[in-house]
Image (cartoon, rainbow, N blue to C red; front, side, top):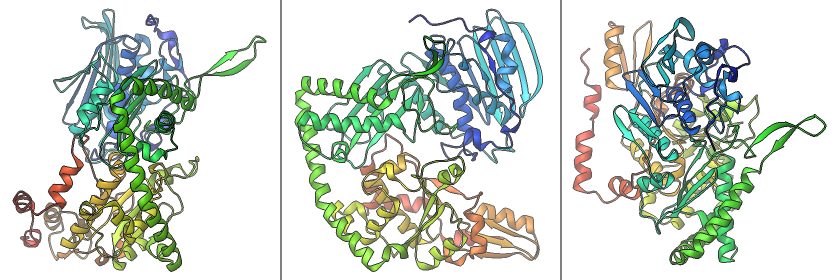
Length: 633
């Protein structure tokens, strides 16, 4: 196909204005945040700009994209066609204006560019754009979405677009870019666009083998057989199995990392199980076919429908949809194959062919499936008995204080925000759970109370875990007994006391997730609740401090008559105070697991035998209670 270079001012369409982006930023970029979470808004702003450059490459223009981050400022320079010169201001400042409403100029882009760049402009303290086209450039500068200056002049630079912006600290309080998150984003772009070079802060990233490079470079456990790599028109997949729990499958649509999956990932998971069952001519359970799987899927579709502007979950049902006129001149919708049928057909044909050619891996795959089946059947009976016993004693209702909205609810315009915010606090003891229960928002915040310390899952078998009442009830509360897609809460928040026992309980809970449900961590669902260690107050003001440095600052600010309280347990904080710590300003530490990190190695270090190496690590990082409380007043 010859790239369509006829991208002119006539391709630009205008639909409406942009005034309320700053009033309702969540509608356009999801969460705001400060950069500590990879889903925070500053990364969405960066992605919106890079996506435009990626789309230029996909259309056949520009083989290099340069991304630079210095302190809080970002610049992105591509070498595509450049924005049509007379439309530069309009294209970056008027909502629902862009070339991607005209599919003659763009095909299979990440999404309609009517919102993204304009949202970046509106939410930036400063925003500068310059388009270079055939010896002439058109530029414009903005502050918080308001045009300050613009102009045209000759240029000797190559065709393409430069965007430079600084997120607005009024929107993104005390933000900072985590360069590791950006590097991961850049690497993913390189895997998905073979032949494209991305230069991030002077370092070049380029992939020769696409998704196969992604999977091979991010393998944390040894695969049971070399990853299978299959490519077709508008689809690319990779898969293998390893001796681990869960499924580690990355998914992408038009180059966009769909962290929360969607129709394409659901179709891929279904297709793998169906194809393996038919190949072996045995009615294996889908979960057994996918246990321990590691892989990736990337598809290209026209006009994708994502759930939310952050584009982390695909909602489209068809590979393409378009309006056409029938023979009578009436307008009707013409649709392509469903994503489900397209993915199923591709996997069924190509995976089956691959297995027939590479017969040496067939017994390896079937042995893995049989081992998973044997373990599942062994524990299913135990789980059933545990559930029945818990129902009789009504213990489930005593441990879970549920909320009204859940992550697996059907999303409507009215409940979308609460579904996204749905959270479960995992805490220990009646005092702590009572405090959180009184302070929580019952619409979307649930509380699960552990009794004492859970078992160390690293040292126990899956059967032993299934027999454990506490963890069995937790699995039921989360809704993940049969499939992670049934997860009931978007945020799983471990909330423990700030003392030795609390830290130990936190480690035991995280070990449980890391060993048996690592995908919950990989998808960004697991967090640790930060609660204040100190309250510093005088007669006029209370200040809550999360570390010794904040405490020192509070003491200097409040000056006289200062009283300091050290909180060691959640139950020591009143529910009236606690409501501030789990509200809009709630501080959460995301539990991160780098793709290349070995789960087994991590658990062995922290939860295995007490080695000298671990003792030294603890000594180096431990802060004593005396250090925390040693303050010069």
